[in-house]
Image 1 (cartoon, helix red, strand yellow):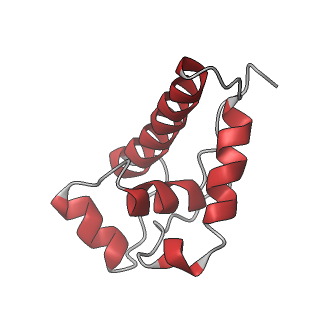
Image 2: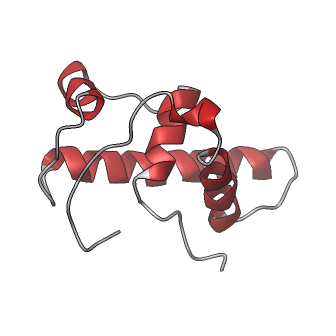
Length: 101
């Protein structure tokens, strides 16, 4: 489990964005906010997935820096659980029709 990272799905970036941990450029943010579909494998979709994984790894490292041993899947689960709360659904998640989620 310690070798796994976050699942780069649609829910985690929504939560990370609401927390201010990741942000989108003006154009991408507007597309997401307008519920526009991103093309599978597009630079925009890959950027969101990569930013999600990078953010989770930074969060994990911060926990470890303070002496709390957690793995990336735990951070993923915590963020996913936050995503089930209305507080973290103020902004939409990105849309992308793909089989890779």
